[in-house]
Length: 126
Image (cartoon, rainbow, N blue to C red; front, side, top):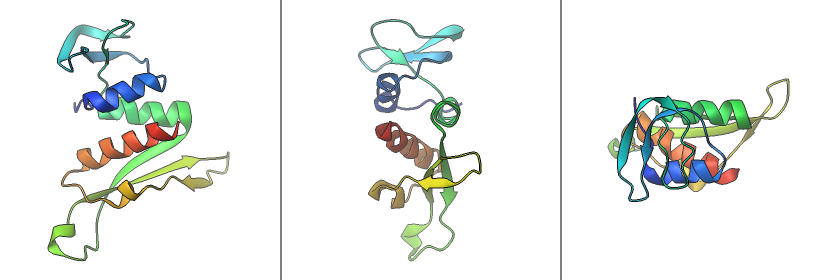
């Protein structure tokens, strides 16, 4: 289970994320674990969701899908890695609206880095 960074977790809280989690960040940014999956109702710190739970929350609550993709046709050897696609399902026919940002063209070494970056960009649009 990959936990999002403190920066992403704080932004998610500001944007309304209050789902049950196994971990939390204190105000100092240190990660702590709970004894079970709980909501994090405290006034200090914030929930520390997994990448998947925050990706799922964006989809189910805001119709925003964030997807890391392999960069299939790199221009140079340095371009191997992952990019992120972010789009919103805008109607029942699954028409999509692309959410673009210069960060979306950035290359990441792992799909998890790409996913976290995409989640952060998606949260900024809320």
